[in-house]
Structure formats: structure tokens, C-alpha cells
Image 1 (cartoon, helix red, strand yellow):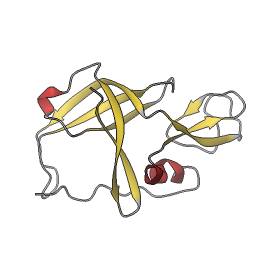
Image 2 (image 1 turned 90 degrees about the vertical axis):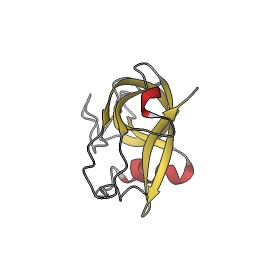
Image 3 (image 1 turned 120 degrees about the vertical axis):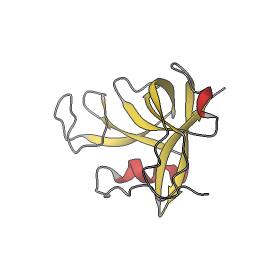
Length: 135
């Protein structure tokens, strides 16, 4: 059984590098050229200093599982359960967290504090950043 299509984001100028960077294996997070802070979700203004001098920057794509839940409810037809929904803090990107799935391991093997790395799932030209355990 395969998973159903993920909800497709509406691509706009500020978020397209985030959703398409996986084609090159890059996790792009918006960074301010004035104050150096990162902003996610992507915006046209820095959320810290309100500068318009923002641009996507490829980050390491590693992080830590801050919290997670295991979903057992098949919300969509053909959705394989159980699966992990996690909040991942990104290494070197203070204050940025991604809500994502932890993949490529049994759900019972996921723990708080696990080191993870990005992997991408492509659907219709969108590269969804998912994470897998790094060890």
C-alpha cells in the first residue's frame, strides 16, 4: 500500500526555495541579510528586524526530535499507519522548528532527543522535507 498524496502547498515567491530545494538535496531556510536571524515559515520580511533583505539559505539539514506523537488514525484512504509526527529543531538554525514526519524506522524506535537528518519525498515537483534517524 502506498501513501496518498500529501497536501500540496501553494507556491509563492518567498516559499518556493523551501519546497523545491530538495531537488538539489538542500533544505532552504530564509535568513536575514541584515540581522542574520532565520525565519520560518518563509516570509518577505524578517520577523526579527522587519528587514526586506531576506533570502533562502541552505542549512545543514540535521536536527533533534524535540517532541513527537505516533498517529494511529488513518485520516485518508490508503494512509499507512502508524506514523510519527515530530517537531524537529534544526542544528545551527536557532528558533526554527519543522513539524514533519520521522521516516525509515519503526515508530517505536523514535525517542525525544534523537539526532535526525533531512530526506526528501518528491510529489509533483514539491520536495517535502522529512527526517530519518541519523544513527
